[in-house]
Image: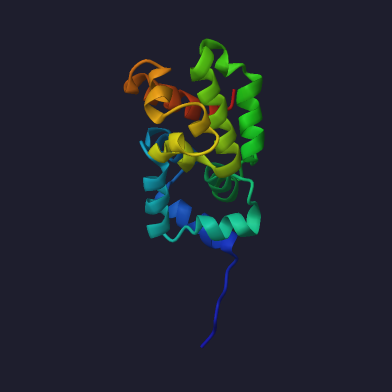
Length: 163
């Protein structure tokens, strides 16, 4: 009996290839996923081990960049590089006061912890966001809850835009 081993990268590339036939298909799925956590769970069922991959390839990379880099040979950015791009594009200019502070704090959270943190309802209750006000106050800074959710979606779009 012969034991055949393959690298984690090759194994991941093959399994992502089974789930997505092209980069475009992956990008479509990524941008349409309401919660990235569900997409990560789906990938895990396909045998894509994102945490192990982060350990091997780059802890500072977002899952998005890991997948694009490993499976589709795209250049990878760190979370910090993605966050800096958003800052450079002056995305925050359309928001004022507390709403702007909240988005800047969320961008910093993304830089430290990744995309699932942005999508978590608990994020508004943790440092440093809890110092800006209660979750209700922070959401009200945007208007209605739907306005807050729209702002989060826009921030995500900005993070993953290539322009």
